[in-house]
Length: 442
Image (cartoon, helix red, strand yellow):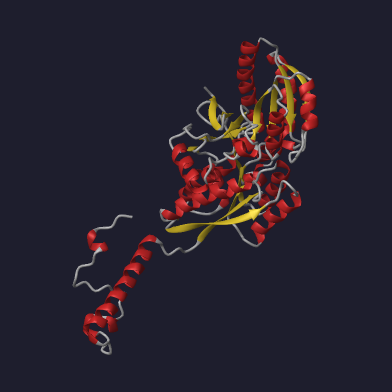
């Protein structure tokens, strides 16, 4: 914050009002020995006053705070992204004076909640209940695994708390809003785009890869579908089984390993025997590392294309010991790919603070900074109903694209992000000799 010289450097005869009268020039302590001691005393108090002035100018006296619960699997990369993104948003907001709410400025206070949702849905519901009853948060962001998010969503709706999802892709989570608006209107999905659009984007990426394979190898395309066992994947697998043959590709089989599998050699051996030359992957958890590493070790002659959330991490190359070379995965952020005018600064700061490019769960940053808090300021209140009415009608840019909230065929709000050119499309990258490079759209 820039201040005039008069503020930073008081004039010689000015007497700051916060100095007690008994320490003024006309009433200095008389029991100090000599001029040297007096100078030391005066200098010490002067430094203390300067420090106090800096604190007052740089750190406003906060009144009420806005409490935002950040919920996710905090022991996993997905939850760490949730927390990192939210932390960055809170720091930025508070550094510029907080959130304007009516006539007051309010500080953003974050509350971390470990959902442990990869392991136990009950842990997730308990974590959400604590946010509501013990921590008494005003809003919630995060969530990842659909099975857990559906349950956590119900708890947040019971308390009429706005819950902005950053992780779960299943369409049914947002379809609840259209079916029972009065109950579920407090839910919004910031990211990712729902699985119907994720698979549509994947089909475009698969088509591009298939074109290269046919051109270079002069062979028909044989696809193996490998998708983790999880609710969010079901619709995507069905869509792939129905669509890929219409795109001129033969499906040689469907494999469904655990999302936390540590050995997939049986699946890979079967894929190798099937002569597949393209593998459509759908992974959100640690099986993505296992599959890529073991496929490389077994030298499976097939290109992996699809979704591999672990493959979005900078640490993927090391985690797979370089065996994840050439896999292609959808992503939200790739260094050097500027989706909007605020993407680059966000990625650069995230890398500086956390040492890696953000994964899409770190979009808690945009959910708070560009979604929630501007609507709080616009309505001048923390009233959830007023904020919902404002937020659902906004269009705004965030780090991953332009947000416009969808409606269903009957015009009912879904509070899901619009997919397509000009809005949110996602991007895809490929690991090439240790570097993650943007390859789609091109």
